[in-house]
Length: 92
Image (cartoon, rainbow, N blue to C red; front, side):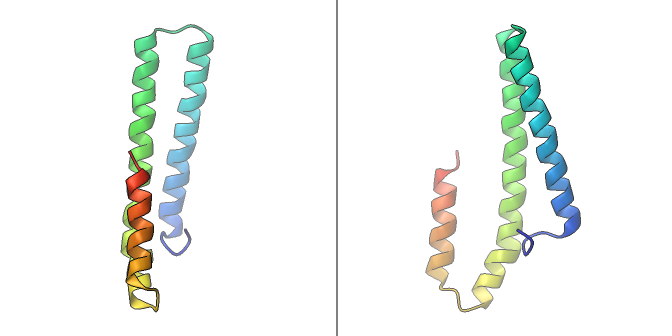
């Protein structure tokens, strides 16, 4: 990951993940205290969107840095493409 992002971007990603972690704990508390189902689902949607944002940022960084570096090196293109394709296929 160090090759893909600079320290500033890494700090932003960590901050985003900590917020998501806090939201996840809040949902646990909501379930424990019997909050309204719709409100819990809204919070889950919020976390899902936030995780998508983190994933998209990491994907962008990977393409801009890691894949570009891999293409300039001796790494076979097929390896780079299959690795990324397999990972994206599993994303939903």
